[in-house]
Image 1 (cartoon, each protein chain N blue to C red):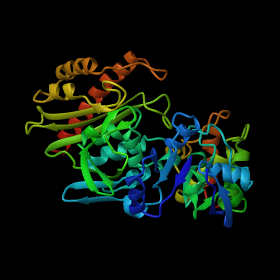
Image 2 (cartoon, helix red, strand yellow):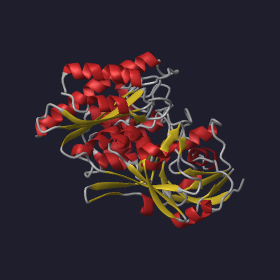
Image 3 (cartoon, chains in turn cyan, red):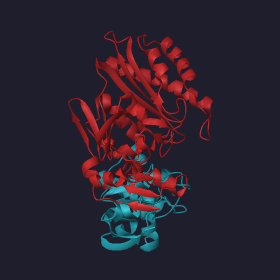
Image 4 (cartoon, rainbow over the protein chains, first blue to last red):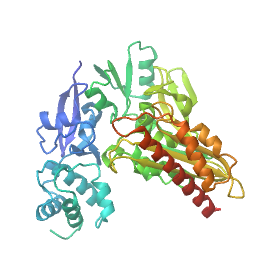
Length: 157
Length: 290
């Protein structure tokens, strides 16, 4: 097994990491770089809990080899803690009790943030599609849908 | 296991030209990575082609032919203005595929080369009569998709070839295409049944000129054309009686096996119901646009 060095920009900072052929993006983000908002759920692409942005697209970090991300830009929840849109979403999630166990919350927030970038006032159907790839095992989704609708509205806090 | 990431497509083709060892091509990896981790496959060498986007990621239309580069993502299909009218079936299937995070990376070529009964796009490309362009260091050849799939996860591609392009033409005349998919939940699901129909009517708009029906799990574990059902429909009037007869032909033609996702009888009923819905959807659309 040959290790290789890849360069990865995570949340605006360049990193050089050594990876094996089967190391996935999630392995590097969590275990080597310490971005623990990225959760590992099913590891098979069924739950979407490991969602991050790669080059501006929402992806499952368990379904991507780290080597395939060489030279690419990754964004995790840690990189958005000071982002106004993310702050609004987080406030709305708290106000609407959208987090119960909290395990899916980082991924739900990433998917919602991605939606908010494109839609200031998404419909319920658009919200459902945006979070459709993320499995929540506790809340029953409607608290999350309400939170996303409120959180996407610009000018609210 | 080794991972080889050549700088360009030419390098990849040269790498597999004389490679005796078993090389597995990885595109986005949404299907392959979990299968490796579950030890369903154990490739000794992975050839990563995911970076060849300049060569293999495009949607082009010229001379009535639509060409998709093998690395075109499912999200690219969803967003393409080219895939409208009689080709909107492709976008329809893309919208029901996986979930946003999967669609952003999963590739058209990967879906075809995975060659299992759960690949959503295969029945769609089948009814469109898709042709596949395979590249090797020696040159290119074109094969019909229906000849490409030979068994579950088995294709007629040689180890020295890479799928480069999928091409198809919309059906001519009074035609429409439609797609249905049923899973146990709306998203992120492996289909119990997915079924695609291309329907062409005679000038009277009542008689079926030709039908092309494809669905997964016809005789075995791969998607295939329902040839007998399609032939049964040809030349008949699109009436309730014809549809009811065609449903019987389909049930006889499908050699379904049940599995942990659904029983054979449930799948058969679903496939029959979808046949009716697809014929009616296409017929209404043809009448409305003629």
